[in-house]
Figure (cartoon, rainbow, N blue to C red):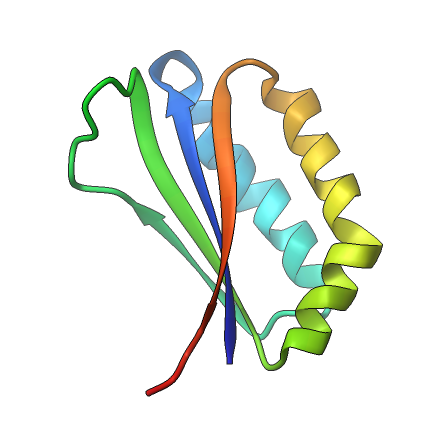
Length: 102
């Protein structure tokens, strides 16, 4: 199993609308691509010095690296662009890939 982890720091003035958009629009669109089996939407509880907003993570679980790579090649740019259009300048995101080993 492969986890595609997207960590996002969101400014507080848009946080409520962003969470609703993620739950109602973005995450369902990513899941509808068919490359992930499940997802988790998480909020970071530890404060990060210097952060002006709150930090969240979305973990998308794929059964193989091939499926993740296909998602990245075919859909990731479009999904990132939609996120950018909706909340430009109000978030910072980075992505990591993890392998479940146990």
